[in-house]
Each structure stands twice: as C-alpha cells, then as structure tokens.
Image 1: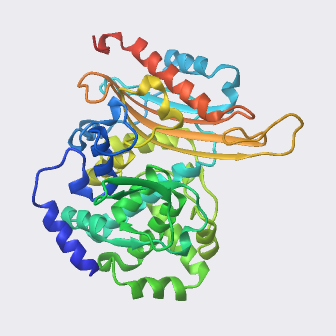
Image 2 (image 1 turned 135 degrees about the vertical axis):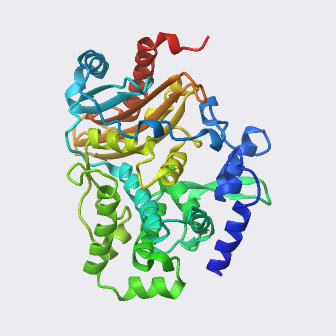
Image 3 (image 1 turned 30 degrees about the vertical axis):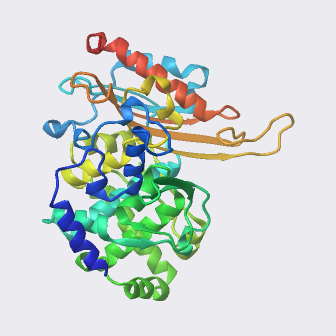
Length: 420
C-alpha cells in the first residue's frame, strides 16, 4: 500500500502545472485551507501581503553566486547593527548579511561565534537530514524523492509524547481547518510532517520526522519499507545502537553540506519519549554558522538545488507569524523563518515567571531570510541570525522590535530600492 501511494503521487505530480499554493505539488493539506481562507471561503487567519507569493516565486536567489562566502566585517555596518541592540548588546549574538546587491555583499556581526543552544532551530538539521538521505538513496531521481515525501504515510505513535504544540489539520469535505495537538494514531504524509515540524514547530512532528530519518538511513533505497521493518528496527535494536545511528545521520546532515559540527549540532529528539528511547547528547549553534547555512541554502548548496529550494519553501511563513517574523515592518516582506526558545525561572521576590521572560535563562533564537517587499525584483534581500539571553524581559517582543529596526536600517542603506 505504501508503494501504491508513491506511484499515485508520482503520477499526480506529473500531470498539472506547478500550483500557485503548492497543495497539488506537496499534498500538504493546510496549504489548501489557508488558500481558501484568503478568498473568504474558510474561517482562518488572513495572511499579510508578504505571505502570499505563489510557490513558483519562491526560489533560490544565489545560484549564480555559488562561490560567495561570508565577507569580512564591514565596520560601519557593524556599528549600525550594534547600535540597534541597545544597553543589552552583550546579551545578544547577531550575524547579518546584506545581499541586496549580491555582487557587493556587506556583512556585520556581534559576538557571532558565541555558542548557544539552538532550541527548535535544530529542526533545520533534522529537515536537512531527510533531504540528505533521500539524495543518498535516490541520487538521480528527483521525481521519486517527491513521490516519497508526498506518498509515505506516517502514523503518530508514542514517540510524540509529550508535546502541546497545535498543528493545522485540513478537513476538505467540511472545508474546515482544525488546530490541535497531534494525537497517537494521526496519519499524514512525510511532507506534511515536515511542514508541521517547521511551521508551527511541533516537537511531536519533529520526533516522527526523526524516526523516518532513522528508517531512511537504515533502509536506503528500500525506504519506506513496511510497518514490520519499522517495528523490527526500533523494537529490537539496543538504545545505544539507535543513538549511534541517529548521531551519524544528524552529524552528516551538517558535515556533508560543508558546515562545522563544532558550531552547529543537533543533539537528538525533541520529546521526552524520543530521548528515552534514543538517548543522545546536547545541541549547539553559533550565529555565524547558522548564517552560513542560510547562505548555502540560497546558493543551492544544502544537499542540492532541489533540496535547498524545498527547504526554503518549507520555511516560507504562510501561517501565523511569531517573534522576529511578527514585526509589522515585515508585513509586505517574504520571510523564511525558524526560531527556538528556552527559558528557566527560579524564585525571585516580585518577579512573575512567564514564556519568553525567564530570570535564570531566557534564550530566544531567530533565523530569517528577508525579501522585501515580496516578489520585488529590486527590493531588499538579507539574511539575519539573532540569539539573545536578556533576563526578565519579553524576548519575543524584543526580537519583534529588533526586526523592525533592522528593516528600517536596511531601507536607509538602500533608499534607491524603496518602492514609490
């Protein structure tokens, strides 16, 4: 049955033109729901103008600049960026690359080699691992890779415990979007699980994707195999061996793509049950290495051009914008975004602990590709990575405010690009 799905998916993909919203290409149901919502046919959030590009307009912008590396720091640009960080500048790490004129890129950074826990940004490594292993298993068959993403049905199991993130379920017959946490028994295509992992940042979805990554690494060209193959592998393999298998796959998702494990590493599962069943180590990242990831993505150097393009499309913000991406200044911009947060609190008189407001740890990380305004041939184009650990203050609001300040600074740097 699973291979029947693949054949049908490949046949469907070969039929029509590339759709504006991507539903026919990917089978990700929430895309159809959100498309109809913009037409007023479904009750759901209306998206800002920058989120309405057709998928065919979401493409790699640096394929002709594949040799470009991060240039030396521009002292004037750096001074401008550091000034935006205010009195807490030493609690921030930031790297920003202005590619508005890709022939003359300008770079600024501040504490960009400081190591931090990437949190959910590590899901980029997981997604890269899936595309990396697909390319290893099927190096010359893009259509089959697409068919596998669309046609492999994945069923949620105990690995999803425990996670409260809500994800969108599209009920096509009722023309209704439902947002709820993933439950054991929920079924969706691998492409949908990737979307759930990256868009609403579901930890449960990440764990199911990581299970598929391990199966893909195990079976190779025999993936997706059968349910018995999966049960046999996870039920009979010792935890230490499972952990070694996952470590190998996550690490080569980094090293195969020219990145450094000392500056970018995803430790393991995002759920308690996943960590119990497959015990692995911690995660780390730096702002500079995450910026290198975004740069190589735009160049088509993360796995290959097809994989880079699909990862970029998975990062396109076409659900609720949050944190850095929620800045009103970016409403007309196309934003390709991932964030991650970690906070901890301890008793403190007069202090009330809350999300993004830890007094012991208040880490918030954001990576973004910004094309402003969306679809403009000669607008702004820049990559930015921000990590902050400002205690007691609302980090989400701080990142939102910083995003607006950076966008305004970029327009000051390129007044000739501003639309009338």
